[in-house]
Image (cartoon, rainbow, N blue to C red):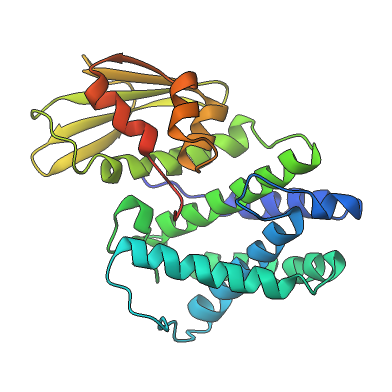
Length: 275
């Protein structure tokens, strides 16, 4: 796998979001979404929180010391979920217009901050869902792109707007999401050289191959040869699987696994979000 540079997508992705939000009816803002118990308005509040955190902790170097001990992944997830819930609850006293204006106001500053970073130096926060202790900035920025794409997609589904699922928008999301797979497979045993191929069908799809090597599972672009298991799914199933938009039971009905099921099944538990 090679680095993926997504800075050029942020401004256009934000423009698409602003056009969508400024055209919503009052009723649409309260519609439920696939994102836990959050409404459309709650997701917009969360996106604003993400921007403000980026500027405060990243650009302005505000100390980000947690107020509770964090010694493992589960504790980190609980901590982040609490922060997210506190912010969203507080923002319910803000109007949709205020939220939209604040999100628009911070967007250019976030984009400028990302542009100021060396893509290859360590990011302030690692991509924990990929198992990283240290991540380069390009990966952290890619993670941010996937979060912004995902939440906009959840809003679009809630209000019945067309999704951003062409290759231009969705393929980069999948290309970042699949980087969770080596961490997903960290406890899966296999002989050296055994491989698992993921095939995502559709305009935005592609093929990726996990190979068991001495240091663990490694991910490669392309189909490889003689895979012990092949996992096939369509692009909508793929992004929902990686973002907890499908439970494993629903995923099994939409995913086809050929070959050794013991090597293909773990992919159904892959997550590329903090959950």
